[in-house]
Length: 282
Image (tube, rainbow, N blue to C red):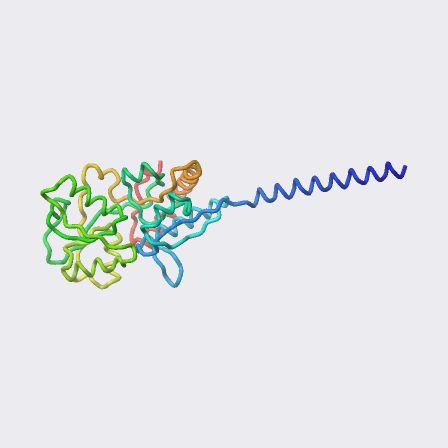
């Protein structure tokens, strides 16, 4: 009789341990989140910048709004040199690049792109008394400086390769060189123009008090770039995990567009409604 009771107690105890183990495992699975490191240079205002020791800007706040609705991910922002973002995604150090990334055919071969976050224009900053520039052809013989890792560098180099008799004189800056230096060089005459997106140029010129010295002119895209001209995106690794993350992020971006969140953030950080047309979110 004592043996029977002892056996019963042992079985109950084992059942209790089993239930506890299963419950604990279920809780662990329920609370486990996929870590996501979002890389940005924190120096591409108004898309990403540092204010009061905090990283913010349109791209950053859009990312925060997105992942607030994706509790299965644990997000961390990391400020790094721009030139290390793409290699960091390649190595798995970062899962997302959020830095006013434009589309290029070469990037599309290696990375997934989100739905476009904003629509601006490729543009140049030139002196107020400079001539009128509408296309890259108009800039032949002129000089500029670009970050070698940027899509703006690629646009200019592609032009030069295809138009050897109408080359633009391109020099390069390091990722550590403040963007403001390029505008200062244009004002001083060291370079003839600064090539970037219109939103960023206007913001930087305003912040630096150069509105009486510089003007911004949109540059028409070449036929090869026209489909993606002015759009900016998040980029993801071209892996199964990257594909899933892209799908999750795009799903939320569609909701944030529908409920007006993107428009609100655009007006706050970009100074106007630069959200792409609704058709871009289908």
